[in-house]
Image (tube, rainbow over all chains, first blue to last red; front, side, top):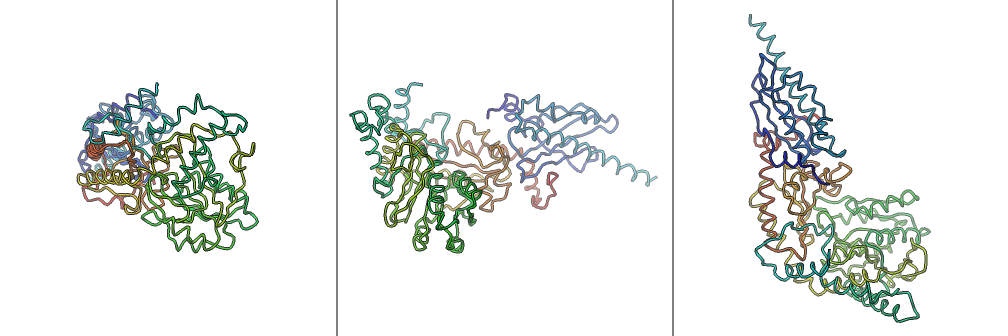
Length: 137
Length: 425
């Protein structure tokens, strides 16, 4: 099976590889997949709490070339978007952009899941932060 | 596309194993198939044009010439495995040989019993044939293997009963190169009057196979795994002590003593014969050389990378095989990184089923490490320079992908990956 040029490009030059402090209040971390399934993606976002804009995104992925490309692309796409905008990213758009064959669609699904998980984690942090500050008053 | 260009290239490489320069891409997937030896092609060529006769034509010289080629090949194959010429049946390849052996025995000995024993790490040509027999009402025992990939002979003994008609266990595994204790299996079968078939596709021409010493009754042989052409193989069928009979699965003109009808693939058969003759002559030196290259590859890789795991026994193994799992790195992405080297992975992503290698799973290798496995198949035309190049590429790619791997990061932080609750489970 041949890879599309875009998959190869992301594989050879993955964007936004790295990690952020997962304990930081403005960082949301999504860890999806399982080693047994051959795919694990960690996607992290750094959100401006005033504007809800994703200012930075990082990823690390254990998986095939298409999984690496899907998560690399996901970090590119979420950057600069608000939380709500990022939640509209669909796996089918990733499939289209990377020309993924049917057997690799699960990689795009995982990338969408990773975005949602990262946002979910960030939201949870904001919720738990508020009551604490309320109690403090 | 012209063959006269390719022949000198391949032979140059073969005769200068110390050449420092490597020609890319490098082929190191010799369990999938092997390039043809130029000497094999040379032997075959006349049988396409001037010696085109049908080996079954009894009344003219065209037929006799073709038959002569076939009979020379039959002698060479028989000699390589210690058989007689009348015990060699030509087929289209090892898959057909496996089908013919297993289905042929099952049908012929149906009245004697309905039980067949095989092992979980067999090739699909054997496993799927056995599954077919189950549909027809046969009982099949699939023996487990031990951590090193070998079957436990006590398991085999326990599995045999008075209805057992056939044991089919491969000589050498296509993924992990592990050699089964064929001689002991043969002895157990002979003592109990059970027919013993072995899929020796990966073994014949690579390691000594002797049908009498090893008590083999049926042996599947393939040409393209030993530098011969694709589309041709053979089945050894024992004629005496004891005589083994099989029902044909292809009916027709009664070729090959009625066991396999169909006009013989004369050029292919001639090629198989030549491949066997070359293997017979060169096996002692070649197996030493390949084991040396394999060990060099292993040492280079494992000296530089930690958390690599060899799959299967190193002691009972084909000389040219190496199967390693690189923890925290997914196999297909590794293949993508070393794209000027042709090797295989046990990763699910390389198969249509999305299931990782059933062979590695049978060894007890976790799914995570099965996804991280690479099979190297070193063959006749690989050089030391190529091995060094491949080792370097593997090392740099694994290092790069580990930097990209969240699992590697977590492991370095001291997190036990087994304790993590994964979202996909």
